Length: 241
Image (cartoon, rainbow, N blue to C red):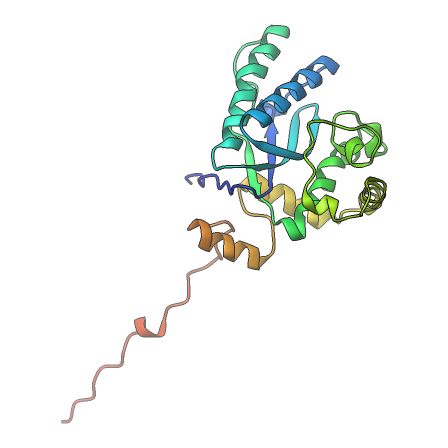
């Protein structure tokens, strides 16, 4: 089956997943994480992509990012790969690709899924057993959102500002949100939709996005489409003997 063209909507958040080839590690030590974050910050500014949330896991990464145009996200990811992959290969005396194909991305319904997606990203280390609490993991945006350590890479979304009138109130409200468990089915929705390139949001959001983009953003319904009445066979005319 031919893969769907990647849908990018300017100024709309996108959930991005990039995995190591064969799920191999793409970060081994602190320097690897720091170098990648430097490239990510430089590229996000160069190609006008706002990074709202992120996590770097040993063998993959997640971003919640809003590009200013239709090409910025792809150009940012390509630029990072152009610099990080040679650095990694040279350091560890390896050759060949580092990533498992092209990055995966899904447009996110801001009103309904933005904060959920941000929490999902920052709770990845906890789900993977790498940390007991998100604040115990260094390589994510959680410390910024929780008010522990400002991160110049993070561009705060309007929905985050809506959580409170002061930084203290916003940080406390966000920490309380993260403490709420994310249901397993919501985790599956966010992961599966991103890996398959489907939009993440309400049916109303998806319908509006399809009309705007002239592109399918959700799985097709199973089975044959219902036949219209006009296409139904007409009875043969009755002839008189």
